[in-house]
Image (cartoon, rainbow, N blue to C red; front, top):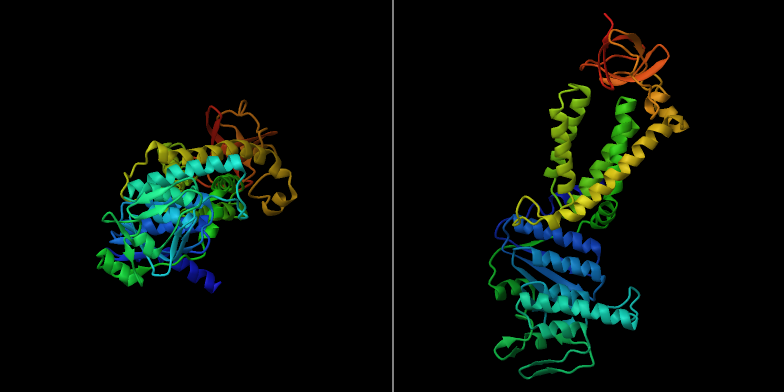
Length: 452
């Protein structure tokens, strides 16, 4: 448990300690994966927010997943902070594409970069037709990325396609094989310009000297939570759904019980996953908490005022969407349409599922043995008042006397004769089995008070 707490503290404080003027070193080691993408994105945003001098990728990889590599490429292109790759010792396959997405490349004396042809997960070649499509697509991406950062696009394409010939000064790479460059080849001047790399550097401090960077080096390491973040963000709509249903059950049952604990856990995991994935900071969770407080206060303390509830719903919606938006510090605070597309789709899926699950929960949950075991009889009556068959308020007139069946906080259930209905007070809490009378009937809303 102590180790878990220390990891959580390290995870929260790891990148917040970056200071202005420092050079942030992010390791890109081993197989390229989604977890590495999350760590890289979080590091880039922290460095940019702190106004660090630059970010250096300390790279030693033979490649990995193309999807994760593409997302890392996009993250590096999206940031406004200067980026450098230090190849020590390998930038193979997907690593070569990632290196091309940084502004400069330096290489250790014994190192290599290239051979980025796409293959299947097990290392086998792709089927012929699929291979042609994938190579064509990623060749275009590589050329575009290289041109943006000032590299020779033919070299980028030759990393991926065997059909690309490269001629640059005395350097000639014929068709028929994938291009792989040693450090010396990559840094060799052709027509007064390096073939690819800005230079050969023995160490990271040597990279800083050659790149003209004077800031202190800030090494950061992944915490191990990045893999967890992958699953949490993948199932974000499910976490939100369970959280919403948990809140609904908790309000119906009364007291802070299992449903409330499950809901709170789901919301914490949702925002924690967004933080580790580099999507949002903790301020988003604060906005969400304020929104939930306003909604609960509208329901339990001052029902009928409407404004707090609407403000709470707005804040909750903003926080949930904000937590899923991939925004960099230099970008506008208000997200653009493209940035909102996937967050709104995920939120829409959650709302649709909630509209289906909540009525089903209201109908079937009271009859489940587990629910009867955790819901005390004095805090929740089992039966129609929790289902879609709630008795109609028609016939329950102002002044009618009844008795509460559940605690009113301020809403709950009451019996008037042989009719069970949902009622609400004007803010007071009333215990179960207390005599009440109807103060007002406002459409389907029955306002009651304690019998004097």
